[in-house]
Length: 423
Image (tube, rainbow, N blue to C red; front, side, top):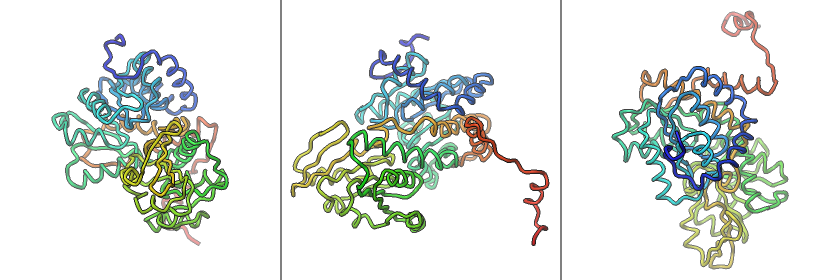
């Protein structure tokens, strides 16, 4: 099939050569995905299955798409965030790998949803989501396609929250595997990936020195834990805000300050939201921030920061660096918003390192395979990744790192399954 025959909308196909080089570089750090790709190429478990994927179009995602293609999948890919697309990667997916792709970095809202519709025009049997926008579009506007869908996967905390709300209302129409809930995803991708890439994105956007700064981390889930740890490692004084007493207590035990946002807003130099909720930084917080405060988000949607309130409080706004907008307030203070309040690790940087995405995307690939073999027997619900898949990915990752572990002896297995032994 020629490039002209592959449905696509990308910035420039001539960027493909650079995209191929970067995709191949990421592949070096994705050995688990590579092993799955090799098996998929032999066994073709997804042969002829139509997949509509709404994911961040990055080098790591490209390696997942290639693995699925080699497994026989017929793929249409669109972006899950207007600022996360790597244009050279999108071009390479079309021109070099023959994968239908609809993604342009910086696309407006209308184009974003036009691209989602283009991916759905593929009449998917499987969906892949990063934030549940494809599922929402299917259930709200493209209901005619729902009878043909076997199942889907969801990558993010935010998306899983939306899907569970849909299921609770009794409106979810097909089974979905919550990839985000796999231990090999949230314990590693969310903590180590988000922690490092968020710090990377803010640093690239601002060139700020972290040492000595007061960094306010909103939310102490796996993503917040990761960022708080890395910011402290760079010499920052870290303050955590929370609404749940258990992670708040954990943050205290981990040695971080814990304050309500109303108090933290007065002392912070850098603010990062990682909660999955809305208006975590609200008008009352913006009203008391220091002159020069930097505000960023690493949760999925830009709802976490009340940008409308910031706009209404401001007398002027101007870009001062790529992905940095200066808002000048009526009292003369300046607040700097990064990446339009969108995912700063993908807006201003490259997202998670390939090594950690290797496990997340291995979960995606094996979950799709599971849905093809078992999806039609599953009741409509949001499911965790099967434990055997989670364990197999951990095993493969350790093997690729040259790390060996012990195995239980028959005697030990019997001991662990018996109630009779004691002191």
